[in-house]
Image (cartoon, rainbow, N blue to C red; front, side, top):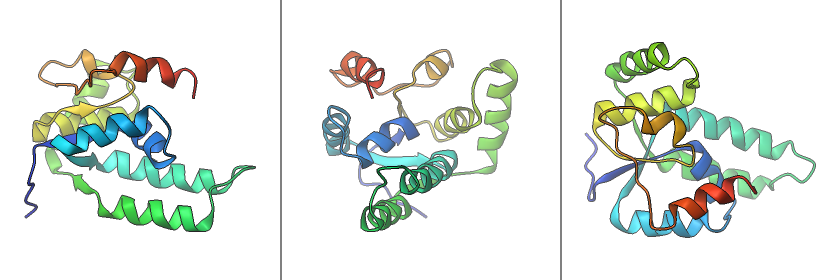
Length: 150
């Protein structure tokens, strides 16, 4: 049984990949959020980030082996929310909104099953889901605009 000391905040892949690379203003927004919340991830986010780390190692300007190992350890330290109900919710999301990718569908399913807000840089697929709440820091619009530049 996992005990949280603060309310949970489900962080999405797009946000955490930028946090791992220490990109501003994403890192600062994340740091403010985790002062108040316990960051958690979905199973899909874990898998997506693990794959993303492997891709980062293969780039022309790859992250170093030490960076990879540090991020991989960080990934293992996250609390991963998962239950049988998540797959059922993700399937319903996929049926209702076929344009939602697998990762987002599972993250939405996780948020609904565990009743936690989501910190995402891709609100399009999340805002339309009744009963789901998004975490939007004061500089949310700046973050969204910055995704177009990164």
